[in-house]
Image (cartoon, rainbow, N blue to C red; front, side, top):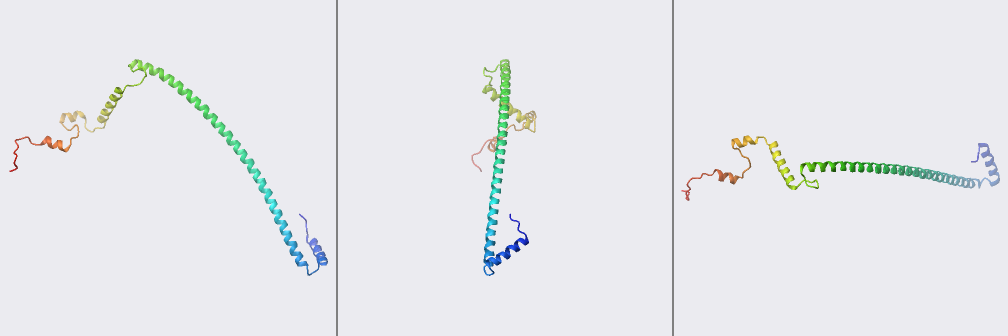
Amino acid sequence: MIDLGLTKLAVIGVIALVVIGPEKLPKVARMAGTLYGRAQRYLNDVKSEVTREIELEELRNLQKEVQDAAQAVKTDVENSIAQNMTEVENAFRDTQALESTSFADNNAAYGANAFGSVTTDDLARKAREFRRKKLVRNSAIPNWYKQRNGSKMHVTSGAARVARFRPRGPTNSSFY
Protein backbone atom coordinates (compact mmCIF):
# COMPACT_ATOMS: atom_id res chain seq x y z
CA MET A 1 0.00 0.00 0.00
CA ILE A 2 0.94 3.64 0.05
CA ASP A 3 3.62 4.48 2.56
CA LEU A 4 2.36 7.55 4.41
CA GLY A 5 4.59 8.96 7.10
CA LEU A 6 3.79 11.69 9.63
CA THR A 7 5.35 14.45 7.55
CA LYS A 8 3.43 13.44 4.41
CA LEU A 9 0.14 13.40 6.35
CA ALA A 10 0.89 16.85 7.77
CA VAL A 11 1.58 18.26 4.27
CA ILE A 12 -1.67 16.72 2.91
CA GLY A 13 -3.62 18.14 5.87
CA VAL A 14 -2.24 21.70 5.31
CA ILE A 15 -3.02 21.58 1.58
CA ALA A 16 -6.55 20.25 2.29
CA LEU A 17 -7.10 23.04 4.83
CA VAL A 18 -6.06 25.68 2.31
CA VAL A 19 -7.97 24.20 -0.66
CA ILE A 20 -11.17 22.97 1.04
CA GLY A 21 -11.44 25.46 3.84
CA PRO A 22 -11.92 25.04 7.58
CA GLU A 23 -15.72 24.71 7.49
CA LYS A 24 -15.88 21.79 4.96
CA LEU A 25 -12.74 19.96 6.15
CA PRO A 26 -14.48 17.79 8.87
CA LYS A 27 -17.12 16.53 6.39
CA VAL A 28 -14.48 15.72 3.76
CA ALA A 29 -12.30 14.01 6.39
CA ARG A 30 -15.26 11.84 7.51
CA MET A 31 -16.07 10.94 3.92
CA ALA A 32 -12.42 10.09 3.21
CA GLY A 33 -12.33 7.92 6.36
CA THR A 34 -15.47 6.00 5.37
CA LEU A 35 -14.18 5.50 1.82
CA TYR A 36 -10.83 4.33 3.18
CA GLY A 37 -12.64 1.89 5.55
CA ARG A 38 -14.78 0.55 2.70
CA ALA A 39 -11.69 0.06 0.56
CA GLN A 40 -9.96 -1.84 3.39
CA ARG A 41 -13.04 -4.05 3.95
CA TYR A 42 -13.26 -4.74 0.22
CA LEU A 43 -9.57 -5.66 0.06
CA ASN A 44 -9.93 -7.90 3.13
CA ASP A 45 -12.97 -9.61 1.55
CA VAL A 46 -11.05 -10.18 -1.68
CA LYS A 47 -8.07 -11.54 0.23
CA SER A 48 -10.24 -13.91 2.30
CA GLU A 49 -12.08 -15.08 -0.82
CA VAL A 50 -8.79 -15.80 -2.58
CA THR A 51 -7.44 -17.70 0.44
CA ARG A 52 -10.70 -19.70 0.68
CA GLU A 53 -10.45 -20.61 -3.00
CA ILE A 54 -6.82 -21.66 -2.55
CA GLU A 55 -7.68 -23.74 0.53
CA LEU A 56 -10.66 -25.27 -1.30
CA GLU A 57 -8.44 -26.21 -4.23
CA GLU A 58 -5.90 -27.74 -1.83
CA LEU A 59 -8.68 -29.71 -0.15
CA ARG A 60 -9.92 -30.95 -3.53
CA ASN A 61 -6.41 -32.08 -4.43
CA LEU A 62 -6.06 -33.77 -1.04
CA GLN A 63 -9.45 -35.45 -1.47
CA LYS A 64 -8.42 -36.72 -4.90
CA GLU A 65 -5.15 -38.09 -3.50
CA VAL A 66 -6.98 -39.83 -0.64
CA GLN A 67 -9.56 -41.31 -3.03
CA ASP A 68 -6.79 -42.57 -5.31
CA ALA A 69 -4.97 -44.12 -2.34
CA ALA A 70 -8.21 -45.69 -1.06
CA GLN A 71 -8.96 -47.09 -4.53
CA ALA A 72 -5.46 -48.55 -4.72
CA VAL A 73 -5.86 -50.16 -1.28
CA LYS A 74 -9.29 -51.49 -2.26
CA THR A 75 -7.96 -53.10 -5.43
CA ASP A 76 -5.00 -54.58 -3.53
CA VAL A 77 -7.33 -56.04 -0.90
CA GLU A 78 -9.74 -57.40 -3.52
CA ASN A 79 -6.86 -58.98 -5.44
CA SER A 80 -5.40 -60.58 -2.31
CA ILE A 81 -8.84 -61.85 -1.24
CA ALA A 82 -9.45 -63.33 -4.69
CA GLN A 83 -6.03 -64.95 -4.65
CA ASN A 84 -6.57 -66.36 -1.15
CA MET A 85 -10.05 -67.62 -2.10
CA THR A 86 -8.65 -69.48 -5.10
CA GLU A 87 -5.93 -71.00 -2.91
CA VAL A 88 -8.48 -72.09 -0.31
CA GLU A 89 -10.82 -73.50 -2.96
CA ASN A 90 -7.97 -75.44 -4.55
CA ALA A 91 -6.90 -76.78 -1.17
CA PHE A 92 -10.51 -77.69 -0.36
CA ARG A 93 -10.89 -79.52 -3.68
CA ASP A 94 -7.62 -81.40 -3.06
CA THR A 95 -8.78 -82.32 0.45
CA GLN A 96 -12.15 -83.49 -0.83
CA ALA A 97 -10.48 -85.60 -3.49
CA LEU A 98 -8.25 -87.23 -0.87
CA GLU A 99 -11.17 -87.75 1.52
CA SER A 100 -13.40 -89.22 -1.18
CA THR A 101 -10.76 -91.80 -2.01
CA SER A 102 -10.21 -92.63 1.66
CA PHE A 103 -13.99 -92.76 2.29
CA ALA A 104 -14.42 -95.14 -0.63
CA ASP A 105 -11.69 -97.36 0.82
CA ASN A 106 -13.20 -97.22 4.31
CA ASN A 107 -16.73 -97.89 3.09
CA ALA A 108 -15.60 -100.87 1.07
CA ALA A 109 -13.79 -102.21 4.14
CA TYR A 110 -16.72 -101.70 6.53
CA GLY A 111 -19.53 -102.60 4.15
CA ALA A 112 -21.31 -99.23 3.96
CA ASN A 113 -23.61 -98.43 1.09
CA ALA A 114 -22.32 -97.19 -2.28
CA PHE A 115 -22.87 -93.49 -1.55
CA GLY A 116 -20.71 -93.47 1.58
CA SER A 117 -23.57 -92.48 3.91
CA VAL A 118 -24.64 -94.22 7.09
CA THR A 119 -28.12 -95.74 7.31
CA THR A 120 -30.77 -94.44 9.69
CA ASP A 121 -30.71 -97.71 11.65
CA ASP A 122 -27.05 -97.19 12.41
CA LEU A 123 -27.71 -93.63 13.54
CA ALA A 124 -30.60 -94.67 15.79
CA ARG A 125 -28.50 -97.45 17.35
CA LYS A 126 -25.62 -95.04 17.99
CA ALA A 127 -28.00 -92.51 19.57
CA ARG A 128 -29.45 -95.15 21.92
CA GLU A 129 -25.98 -96.31 22.93
CA PHE A 130 -24.89 -92.73 23.54
CA ARG A 131 -27.90 -92.03 25.80
CA ARG A 132 -27.35 -95.25 27.73
CA LYS A 133 -23.68 -94.54 28.24
CA LYS A 134 -24.42 -90.97 29.27
CA LEU A 135 -26.88 -92.16 31.92
CA VAL A 136 -24.32 -94.62 33.23
CA ARG A 137 -21.66 -91.92 33.37
CA ASN A 138 -23.85 -89.37 35.13
CA SER A 139 -25.36 -91.73 37.70
CA ALA A 140 -24.03 -91.50 41.25
CA ILE A 141 -24.89 -95.12 42.12
CA PRO A 142 -23.71 -97.93 39.84
CA ASN A 143 -26.33 -100.04 38.08
CA TRP A 144 -25.00 -103.32 39.53
CA TYR A 145 -25.56 -101.96 43.06
CA LYS A 146 -29.09 -100.84 42.22
CA GLN A 147 -29.97 -104.24 40.77
CA ARG A 148 -28.43 -106.16 43.69
CA ASN A 149 -30.15 -104.17 46.45
CA GLY A 150 -33.48 -103.76 44.69
CA SER A 151 -33.53 -99.99 44.61
CA LYS A 152 -35.60 -98.09 42.08
CA MET A 153 -34.42 -98.28 38.53
CA HIS A 154 -37.00 -95.79 37.30
CA VAL A 155 -39.40 -93.22 38.78
CA THR A 156 -42.91 -94.39 39.66
CA SER A 157 -45.91 -92.18 40.19
CA GLY A 158 -47.68 -91.76 43.52
CA ALA A 159 -50.73 -93.77 42.39
CA ALA A 160 -48.50 -96.64 41.28
CA ARG A 161 -46.75 -96.69 44.66
CA VAL A 162 -50.11 -96.74 46.55
CA ALA A 163 -51.36 -99.62 44.40
CA ARG A 164 -48.11 -101.51 44.92
CA PHE A 165 -48.08 -101.26 48.71
CA ARG A 166 -51.87 -101.62 49.36
CA PRO A 167 -52.66 -104.60 51.60
CA ARG A 168 -54.25 -107.49 49.69
CA GLY A 169 -56.39 -109.18 52.33
CA PRO A 170 -60.13 -109.83 52.46
CA THR A 171 -61.94 -106.61 52.07
CA ASN A 172 -65.14 -105.77 53.89
CA SER A 173 -67.54 -103.67 52.00
CA SER A 174 -68.74 -101.84 55.10
CA PHE A 175 -66.63 -99.49 57.11
CA TYR A 176 -68.10 -100.58 60.51
